[in-house]
Length: 146
Image (cartoon, rainbow, N blue to C red; front, side, top):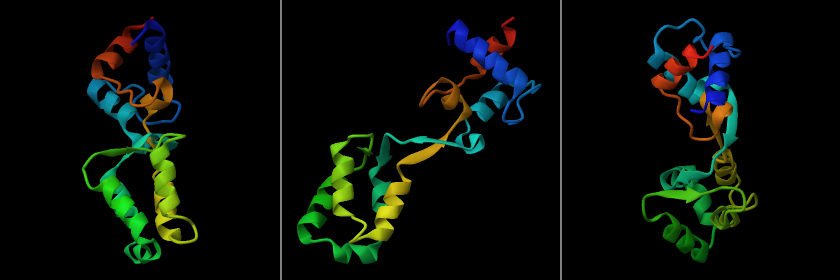
């Protein structure tokens, strides 16, 4: 972390503005765990990718009857291998998936897919950026900032 980031983290640790429980907490790993826990911040951020398995779990089986065979074949080709799908803004794959499952032919699937666009953010991500992980070393160094 940069000196500026360490100073910002020190302020966070000293004030605990969301009352997550790390102000005065002596265990640096415990504090890092709190800062990295997405369930605690109450803030959502845009997902940039999702697992292909999550796409399949989003599909309402009854709504598969509403898509044509060509769309079904394209869906199969898209998800047949394990991995992730880019759903960042402007993603062609995202547009493609949402063109298969429209509000008209698959409203339940579309609602579930739309819910995948956001995810819970950790406090560390809110402070320092997406996919940032605060380490116990970061916490220890921030506590030393004067």
